[in-house]
Image (cartoon, rainbow, N blue to C red; front, top):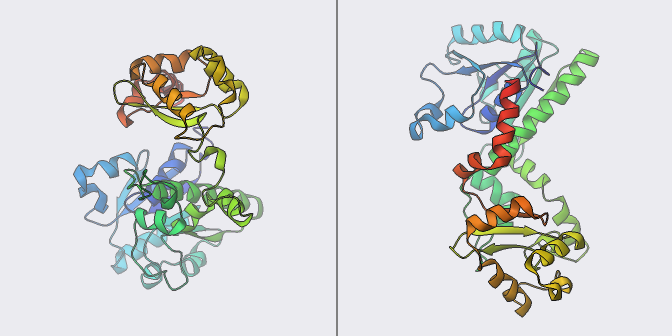
Length: 325
């Protein structure tokens, strides 16, 4: 899919993670993405050694423009004339103050696709409030679904809302571009990161409305023996996702425990669960790593982020990716 967006030009006026990630995804698909940064550069260049900037701006051209100056705004206008889509992540109202809002720019480029990506959207009582990933996770209800054994929300070490918001922005821009190329009409996209995260909780809404569960699909909520996280002999972890009877049967056959066949839906904390947990503790993590590659029971090791590069799956995928890069 490298060249799917070849010939499409995107202006990326975004900082930190959500917008830059969206622009990078479009660049990966072949778009000519021009990242517009202030004269001093994207603030993420100076945050934590610049690694966030490095990770989310692959494949882009960069221009430095002072959008607060008349000359800078004129330069932007010239860029817009030859642009298919623009993505911006300023607080609501900032682009209008700069004279670079959608209503102004569509006068220069009538078929422009203009995407505003923000925490709480462009309208409403929260629109002007500052926010970050942890806020979107909390307000959407997603953070409440990530709890430790005491019921306390777990602090994520990744910015899930930022990345999913970036993916959603890229998706919406591509859809709008398709319409533009079919009809000749541009459009304005208002994407709120907290709303994007809420979209992933549709299952939870239905189960709650039906009075079944506050935590989505019960079968995958960490309540049953066959779908759980288990500790290994050396204190690391593996995941078992043997929801279907056929996978649970394969696991029981591997364990040589035919009496376990009826235990798949036994609750965590039960005597049956303890027996399964003890079995997982009979092998170290590396042993389970090898088992996961040989036994078709929906079994995978919990990898550290850097370890994924050494896993056969990612090694093979990286070879495929390099073949078209």
